[in-house]
Length: 66
Picture (cartoon, rainbow, N blue to C red):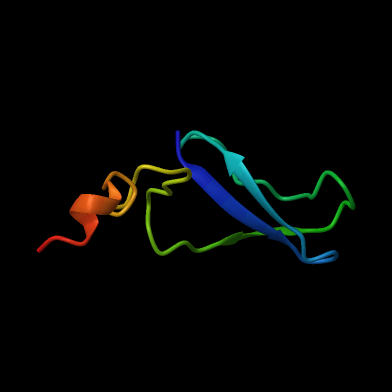
């Protein structure tokens, strides 16, 4: 399920929402009631956590070798 980022027009808080492609976009911020707009992301996939970069899985000995 994709993660979408929204920004509130009143309090300028940024929120993330996991939604299906068929779900309607969020329109109202639950906290303050302000209007939400979808923020365009550069990538369709967001990797969070460790293990996604080549430097994460290397040991210190192999990281310095060419």
